[in-house]
Image (cartoon, rainbow, N blue to C red):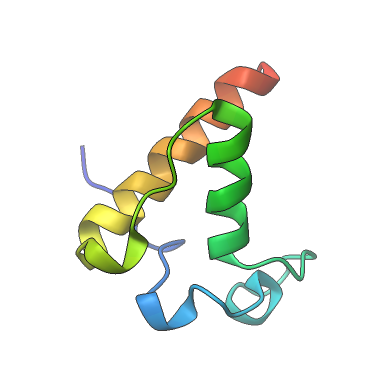
Length: 74
């Protein structure tokens, strides 16, 4: 299965409001804030996003998305 990279962010975009990166997004939160919130909710140790490759970082964010969706019952 091919990965959908259309919603991936670069390291330079970690602190950019998501509404500035993805048209139609209403949150002013950043990808970094989202990751930190997910890690706190899921009881995970904060990951070193800067130490990850672009692919690893986005796969990590995608995995958080999946875990949060399961938690919310989606």
